[in-house]
Image (tube, rainbow, N blue to C red):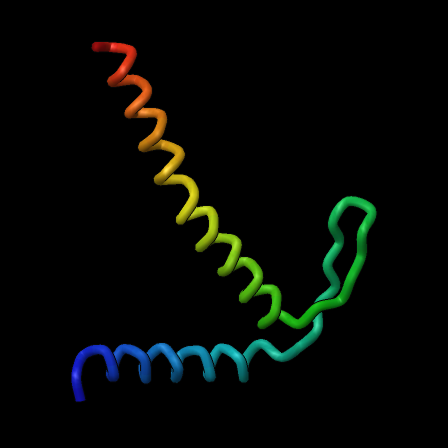
Length: 73
């Protein structure tokens, strides 16, 4: 087995363990909005938001640095 296969299987095993441990439903209160959602779904939503922010922010900061360098010249 190569490194990629071992990595995928390891991540899958961790995901299954986390899924089994986080099946209960919890209440969510956000401003005037209330809902009940499973812990696992909440974790997945937060993970996706974190990935999106992580992908967007470096581009934002690189653009700012390029604009700064143009102003200095």
